[in-house]
Image (tube, rainbow, N blue to C red):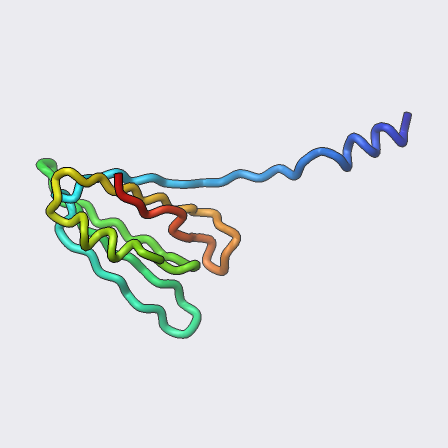
Length: 107
């Protein structure tokens, strides 16, 4: 019986959780964006300013794993009313700073 209990305990998965934040916005809401290049071991940083009827919102996302095609996607989408952008940031990633851009896509 003890062996069974020990085996059951060892076979259980480790407790883990993922904390993500998702932003969805249209191309017409993109007021400006800037990519800050990393210094030494710092991550790339995406600074995005959105504007809407209710005011402006600034989003700053560090990307330990790089931004990939995100700057090109944002450039294409900026001002385009038919494009929706989805940004997903993983806030407890297994990276040096614990933050990475998990998704940057257009829909």
